[in-house]
Image 1 (tube, one colour):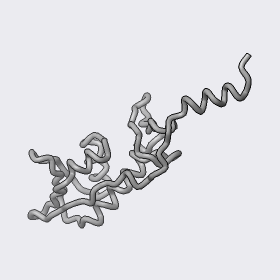
Image 2 (cartoon, one colour; image 1 turned 90 degrees about the vertical axis):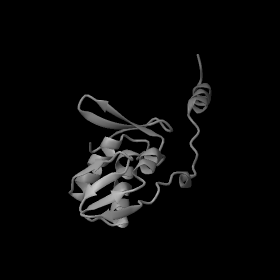
Image 3 (tube, helix red, strand yellow; image 1 turned 45 degrees about the vertical axis):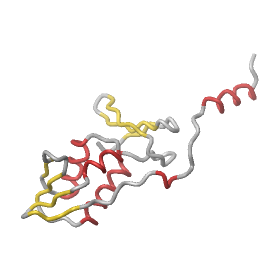
Image 4 (cartoon, helix red, strand yellow; image 1 turned 60 degrees about the vertical axis):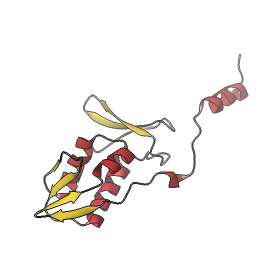
Length: 135
């Protein structure tokens, strides 16, 4: 029969390495310009690539946070109805990152969104934690 030390050593071997350097994950600052009554989020695609999330999910969150309508144009830019500052969009993206990207247990961005029945879960590939999101 295996002893405690054997089980502990096996658990340590199977635990993924977690890089404690939280500086490795940075979302690019929003680059926006006004075009008539719309705000064009020029680097929306870069933000999506960094977040590793579906464009529809991020866009819906932005619409809800900013209280506006939006769509993605043929160039991959988000076009938001109304005038919004870079700061306001950055704050909304920070809120999205906190809710749907960063693991609440270890703080790393190595997560995936999974739907389980009607719940949207955040699963961390670094520490194995699973947590419910606010959908």
